[in-house]
Image 1 (cartoon, rainbow, N blue to C red):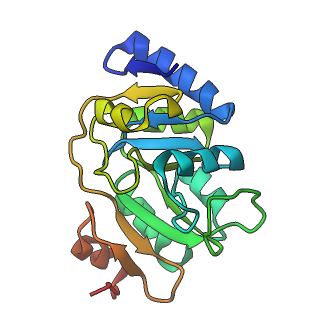
Image 2: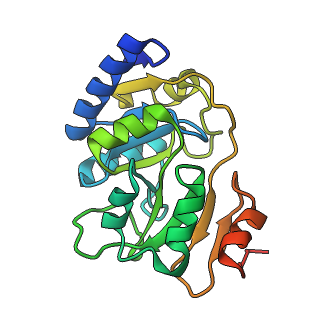
Amino acid sequence: MSRRYDCANPAERTGGLTDATSAVRNGELVVLPTDTVYGIGADAFTASAVNALLEAKGRGRDMPVPVLVGTVRAANALVESLGTYGQDLVDTFWPGPLTLILRANRSLSWDLGDTKGTVAVRMPLHPVALDLLKETGPMAVSSANRSGNPPATTADQAQEQLGELVTVYLDGGPCDDDVPSTILDLTTAVPRVLRKGAIPVDKIRNVVGYLATEE
C-alpha cells in the first residue's frame, strides 16, 4: 500500500524523506514535488526501477528519462564535461527549471532508455526535492502522470493517475507554476533549444550568445 506524507508538517516531512530515500534505494518508485510539476522518480542506476517508472507512465524506451541531481558535483560525475557553455548556464540558472542535454559519462553503468549516449540533467529549485536528492544521489525523474495525460501539479493528481504503482508520495502542496523546464541541447557546437519552458530563450541567449531554436 502506498504511503503519503504532508511535507508542510515538519515531522511528516522528516519521516517522508527517510521513507522515500529507503524506497529509492530498494528500487521502488516515489512521487516528489519539483519547481515545475510533480515528478515520479527512481534510482537512476537501477535498471529495473527505471523500467518500472516507464511502465507506470505507459512510456516507451524511445523517450529516455531525465535525471535530477541535488548538487552540481553530482551532475559533473554523470557527464563527460559541461562543455563550452555548461558551467556558465549552471552558475546562472541552477537550481532551477533548465534541463541540459550533455554527453553521458561512458564509464557509468545505467539504462535510462534509448539515450544515444546523452543524458538530460537538471537541479530543481525545490527544498523537498533537493533534500531527497542529496540523500539518494541522482534520480531518474519524469512528470508524475500517465503518458498522454496532463502533468500532475498536486500530489492528489499524481496519486489519482499512478496509484499503488508508487511506494511513497511526498506532498509538497500545489505547484507554484506548471510551466515545464526549458530543455537545451549542448551536444552540438551551437546550443539548441529543444523545448521552450520556464527559462526564457532571451535569458539563455544572454549567457551563450548565438542560440539555435526549432523554429
